Image (cartoon, rainbow, N blue to C red; front, side, top):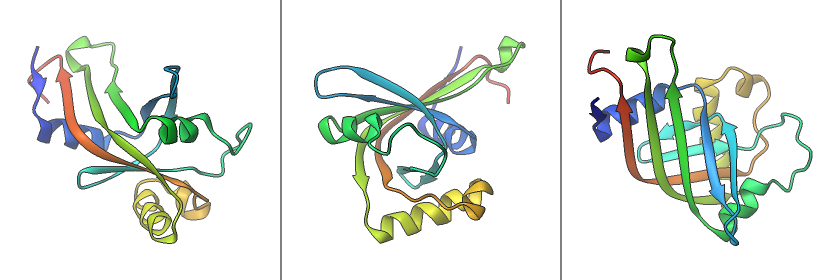
Length: 142
């Protein structure tokens, strides 16, 4: 079962439509949420959008402030198990709320998701600086 090199892992991750963001609070409580994202070089950008939420004081944002180490996971499931793959991104996140961060995130997310063009995210932006792209595939064939 082949491991993916960092370039292949990055390419698969960048093409994925959704990933899961894992954060951990300062006292060690894990938190996992699905996110849409854009890859910008060695960074992953996630903007807090306008979808209904129970609060604007999101646990993921508080966790990043308390503990900036994060992990993202994108994967492909198929009944044909030879088509399975996953990519994990390990890095450090920062919550950014300045205009330039939101402008960049809106442009990149809008290019990937039409919903972000018609309803631009309000922010803030989670910016993950990637330390490692890693992954696995069940088959060496694409």
